Length: 477
Ligand code: MN
Ligand code: MN
Image (cartoon, rainbow, N blue to C red; front, side, top):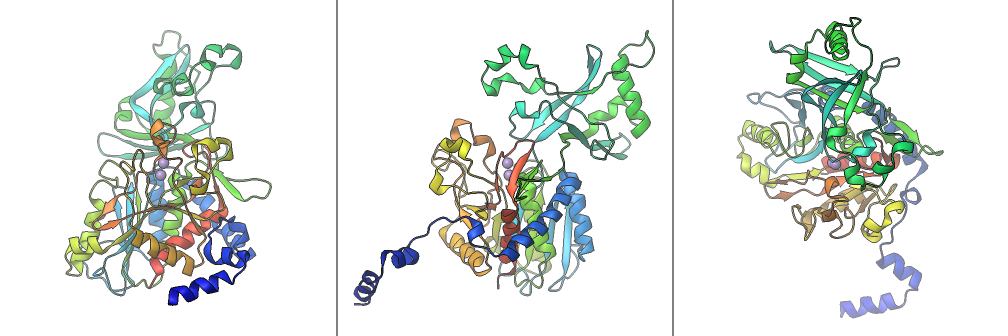
């Protein structure tokens, strides 16, 4: 009877009214937000750009996070200490990953809320024995890291970041190419006039990993008898500046990254262009969300991790679970019960729809620039292989949380069905979708244009919505 009444009522409505009531058309975010929100987004991104410029590597991102956390009253976590609601702690994992937590009013007995983002980016790492000279020039050999299109890394200015650890344990921080007046570095490419053979090769094979050698000098030590005079001159300069010898490069983590600064893109300044948005564009909002979170009900945790997949600072290692287990034990709770009641946002970027490459996207199920925070319920390719498909209950909860908090959001898939398996976007599949106890984590993050390129683009409005979204997830009663 009730259903019949409803049907009748619906039939009395005009198509316009019906459509408003029943359909869910996609709308550009700018038609849904106030001027005030746009101003806030622009302001938020000034902070984001400053973060991008001061933290280009995972180590620098952790340093930034520790400094910001301490400023906000966070202290190093002591598993033996008894914490009270509102206490703020952080755990620095080897300087390359960090967990931050605020104890909730109900502690962690009903689970914790986690937002996890990664702070490593595609880059060129040095090989263990990198230095050589060839045709009277000095070079460094690299081993690229992350899914890159190799040709994009030639003929751009590069900066050197990282650490050299001497055999006595002394850690020497290196950074050249970021300050005004610093020298920079580059990988040379062939001139088009002589590039005909190169131009006929498929894009993926025109450059090999072994071609990515960085030009670092061209003056020899001034001694015509000297062997390896060009290489020697570079070592002389490095020794003067850092006190290191060639053998010290064996125990170094040196990353060459694009030397560009983060800048506004567009006449309207609506976008930010920078190196390493994936995934610092989620890491920064996730950090800001916990720094500005007050009196959460459940304990909240932001994780900024090194390598998504591997290593003792990566998310596939146990450090995050151990951290949560320590939080649980400090309250006398069973860690696995806390873990299985926890919820998690895998804060990682999505691919923004790019009209120039429309054929790889499915327009109806894509995330768009200025569409707000993008949700990917699952990723994976060829029958959702390798994905963690978030359950409908959690997605329903998230969408209510976002709607209640006025967060602009959208949902999409990473490209067409089976497109990812073809090699075009497979390298870009967000890999942080991990599973935590009973909670499957959806990827929730900012849509990115030119993902994994040395210079990526995001929308300011979307970055701000990531902050609002992660904060709403933490704040929810
Ligand atoms: Mn990525
Ligand atoms: Mn990512």
